[in-house]
Image (cartoon, rainbow, N blue to C red; front, side, top):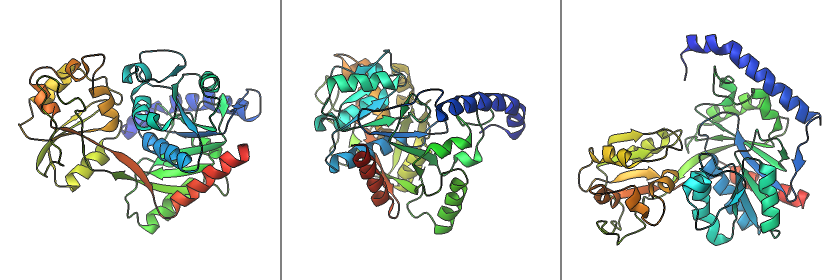
Amino acid sequence: MLPSWLAWLLLPFSWFYAAVLAVRNWLYDHGWKRSAPGWVPLLGVGNLRVGGTGKTPHVAWLVEELLRQGQRPAILSRGYGRQTKGPRLATARDSAATVGDEPWQYFGEFSRQGVPIVVAENRQLGLDLLRQQHPELTCVVLDDAYQHRRVQPTLNILLTELARPFYHDLVLPAGRLRETRAGATRADVIIVTKCPPDLPAEVRAAAEAQVRRYARPGVPVLFSAYAYAEPAPFAARAGVDGLASPPSQVPAPGPALLLTGIAQPGPLREHLEGQGYIIRHHAVLPDHHAFQPADLAALYRHWQPGWPVFTTEKDATRLRGEGELGLLSLWPGPTLAMAAHTYTIPVRVALLGDGAARLAAAVAMATRAAG
């Protein structure tokens, strides 16, 4: 967060930026700029703030719920950080470099269930590609498209982090908002994310009251928490020369390292420390960081044989390397021993109270109404 004096100095620039965005939104709201509906129901997930609010696990929750409801969903993302341009349908020949780390993570999770993953800067072109390649689809989940107003979601889901809510923030550059707080009026569902599982009722009520100052009347305000699964061995390619088979059991509590290239690594570290791990070194790298062998060599200098190294599923998509060499392209020499002791922490969201039932009902209504 910026120092208060610097935020004050940047306020005029924020006002100018907010005014430009307000005009843009007014043009869309009043039909001067066209916001096209999808050829199937569209379920958008996004936020007002730059940085991590938990979009990836919430998208995964939606896709799993759509599959449970008998739908045939796809995921459409911008593909931030990829080295390609234009609409692209992810295949097994792709990687985090060609489609982006989050879409590649979705591909690993959902491709076996027949969920197509497409990336496109222009979401309308992405929808056109899906229609051409997968006419059997019944709905599409739009990842991080809240400000992409060329398309009109059937259900618009807004995420805001409990520790950094949009109603306490300012527009860039004085704050971290991509648009003014009034953007919350476009939401059909608002989810306050990264809450403690035992969030006190009074804290929940206070947050909901703040959200409702900007939301449309009757819009559901839900709360979610992260649910971490047991660590999973990272080294999927056991048998590579110099790479031992990964330990099969969960590492015992004790000294450990943490490697992250995500926007908000704090909750993961708190979870690991709550499980008894002592984080001797945390390599904190920028969101979507393209890992290099030098990053792993630097981490290796802090590692002791047998210590577990933890990372996220999103980071793992960029740590597995590219091309035929796979792991060897990023983990040369002695760091391969560390790779065999590296684990990813699967994360899902758990909606608090009756939130899961209410969100599932909203999803069913959106797909039914548009179908």
